[in-house]
Amino acid sequence: MSFRVGVVTFPGSLDDRDAARAVEMAGGIAVPLFHASDDLKEVQAVVLPGGFSYGDYLRCGAIARFAPIMNSIVTAASHGFPVLGICNGFQVLCESHLLPGALTRNSNLHFLCRDQKLKIENTNTVWTSGFKPGQEIVIPLKNGEGSFQCDDETLKILESEGRVIARYVDFDPNGSRNLIAGISNERGNVVGLMPHPEHAIESLMGPSTDGLTFFTSALQQLVGR
Amino acid sequence: MAKIIVEVMLKPEILDPQGQAVASALPRLGFTFAKSVRQGKRFEIEVDGDPTPAQMAEVEKAAETLLSNPVIETYVVKVEK
Picture 1 (cartoon, rainbow over the protein chains, first blue to last red):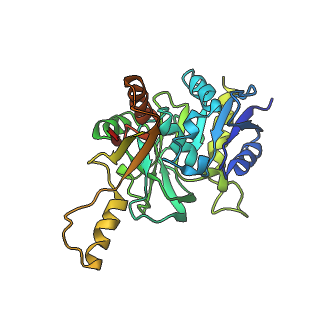
Picture 2 (cartoon, each protein chain N blue to C red):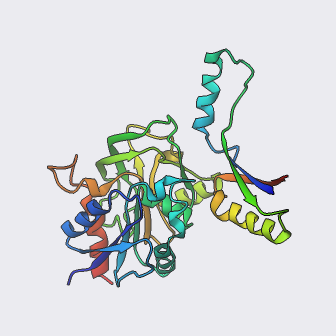
Picture 3 (cartoon, rainbow over the protein chains, first blue to last red):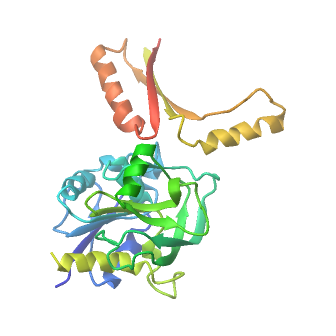
C-alpha cells in the first residue's frame, strides 16, 4: 500500500511542487494541502515546503504559523505525526514552537544558492532513518535567512540529546550556531532542515540523489507502524 | 487619536548582521560617532480615542505572539498622543 504525504501550499510557497514530486519518486502519494483549510485529508505525514510564505513579511514563517492548516499540524505533531519542514518550512516550525530556536539573517547578509555538503548526525528520526550515521551528502542550499540561533541552554539540550540531525561541512554558509543545518524535536517525528532535499532526487536535475533518502526514510517508517 | 507604538529589537546576544552592516557603512560616510548599531522594528498602531486597558492588554498579547518572536526578540509597548 502507498502512503499519503501532504504537501502544504501557503501563499508564496515555491517548492511545493518539487516536494510533491519527491514524495511520489520515493513511492508515496503526494496530497496537496491548502493553508486556508484545516483539513489534513487523511495524510500520514506532512511536508512544509520552501518559499516565502506570506511574502516573509514581519519574520519568515511568522504569519504562516497562524494559518488554519498549521493548527491541525501542530495538534497532529504532538501525537507523533511526521512533519518535515524544509527552508521556509523549517522557519514555520520554529515560529510554531514545534522546534526550538529561530532562523535569522545569514551572517554575511547575502542570499546564498549553492550545493552544500552536510553531515547526517542523527539517523533515529522518522526523516533520516535511511542514512548511515555520519554519512556526508550534498544537496542545494538557497536562502537569505538560514542562520540557526538559540540560547546556550537550548543548544546544550539539542547537542546532548543528539537532536542536531545535520551539520554544514567544509563551509559555514550563514553563521548558524555549531554549524547546525537541521534539528528534530524530542520525539524525532518533527524535523526542520535549511537545505533542500527535494531538489536533489534525480541526477539530471540536482547535485546528487541524496535528498530522496529523507522521503524514503519517512515512507519506510510509516510501513513499520 | 492615539498611537500605540510597539518597538521590537533582537536580544543583545543574537547576532544582528543588518546592524553591523549599518555600523560599517557609517564611517565610510564620515560619521565616526558609532561604537555599534543594532537595527529593530517599530509598529505604529492607530486606535480611536485613548487606548483602553483592555486594548493595551490585547496589544501586549499581539506583541508577544505575532509582532515579536520571544525566542530572539524583545519588545516595548508605548502610547503616543
